[in-house]
Structure formats: C-alpha cells, structure tokens
Image (cartoon, rainbow, N blue to C red):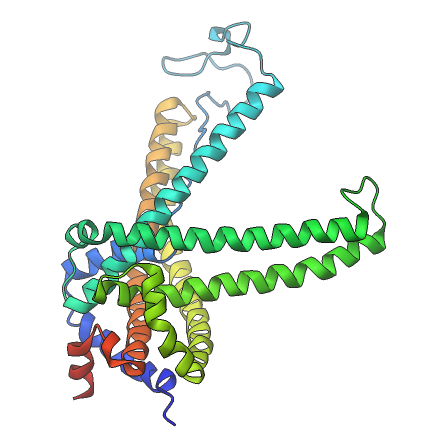
Length: 346
C-alpha cells in the first residue's frame, strides 16, 4: 500500500516552489503577515524603563544641565502609599490584560488559518478580503480550540484533586517525601498524555478539518463528523502523517532557529554601532538619549519579527501544503488544491 503521507513530502516541496517562485514581493509580504499569526500568535515585549538621570563617569559632582534628572525636584513623598492591596490590583490588571491579549491573538490566529488555506486554494493572497469572509468560521475554530484546551486543564485539575485526596487526605500542610514523589509519578504522565491529546486534536483540526469547513461551509463539529469516516478508515495513513509531521515540525523549528539566530545577530550589529555612537556623543544618559535608544530597540524588535515572518513563509507553506496533499489523497472530496496538485504531478 502506498503511503502518501511519505510520498507527499516530495510533492509538497515541489508545490511550495510552484506557489512561491518566482518571488512575488506582494505575495510574500502578505503571506508573512498570515504565517506570523498562524505560527501560534505574536507576543512582543519591548524594553522599557530607560534611565533619565545623568551619569558622571569621572567621579565628583556634576552640575545639572537642562533636560537632566535632578533628584531635588522629586516630591518628598510619593503620591500614594504602596500597599499590598494596590500591588495585587496592579498584578490583577496586568494578568487581565495578558489574558485579553492572548484571547485576541488566538482569535486572529484562528481566522488566519482560513486566510492561509484560502490563499493556497485560490492561488491568490488577499488578507483583508479573506479575513472578512471567514471571521465567523475563525471564531468557531477559536472556540473549539479554547474548549479543548480548557477540557484538558480540567482533566489535569480533577486528577490532581483526586491524587491530593487519595495521597494526602486533602491539601497537606506538611507532606512527606514519599507522598510528594507518589503524586508526581501520577500527575506527570497524566499531564503529558493530556497535553499530547490536546495537541493532537487541535493539530488534526487545523490540518484537516479547517479545509473541510472552508470547502463545504460547515461548522467545526460538522466538519469533524464529515472527516471522521476518512480518518477512521485510513488510520495507518494518518498515523504515518502524524509521525512525519512531528519530525518535519522539529526540522522546521531547527531551520527557523538557525536562520533567526544568524539574522538577529546580523541585524544587531548596525544597531549596536548606532547606539554606541549615540551614547558616546552625548556622554551621559539623558532623557533624549533614553528615548533614542528605546526607538532603536523597538525598531530592532520590529525588524526581527519581520525577518521571522519572512523566514516562516516557505516553511509554513510547505507544512500546510503537505497536510492538504495528504487530505486530498485520502479523500478527493476534500481536495482544496486540485489545480496545484495537477500542476506538480503532470
């Protein structure tokens, strides 16, 4: 029996070349935006809290100049007491913002899955048009992913509670070493298995259910029902796909990390030179110098993110075309890249 989960690797490479070459700058830039979110979301932390005070490298007192930080101008008391309640309020606010940002990025990433597949299906990339067309399907996918993840967390929490009751009789105040080791022995395999199952379900949904949702305008659950007979009837093929996709994902991660490391270092050199010149010319860290350095850092981070997105374009395109080729070979009714498939195989 032909294992198209193996044979399609070569076809996916040819399909990627056919789709991306010759290089079309507009297509690559749009795809870079798409794969930036498809690759798991985007989270950036810009360096902050640059010093605004003057620094005397020669020792002794230095006269204050205009724009320098003068400690005598500080108020004698802070504008409010720092209490534990205020600290917890700040922590809660930061956590809430982080959760909301994660949910927003998760939603955008879910919609971008459809944008990506539609771009491959139509051999044309239109981010805004496809986003407006599929945001409802993306919302359903986001809800499904979130539900599966929450279910996995609940399973781990329930098992943890059961282990605590069985081993400690509740929440222990002074657990023994044997009890702790026993709890770890039980909980760690459960966590690993649950994480693997959640990843498998979400991975199969992204790779095979999303194209069915797009092609047949179905919900996530209906598309899973549609896909299930094919999956169940060709377990060997899809088992090989899962193994190959796991290996290919690791290989892609290594390639990405290697290229990003080299690119980030190359990009950092001119920024370090410019930053060093700014500090050397100013002679001290004033507010203006801090703002200039902050601008350089922000620009550098943006360029690194853009580089990451461009590097990911051919790699993520290859992985997605590979899964779409496997899906179409397992069931012609689900083939959303028929024209591209015909081009590379003819």
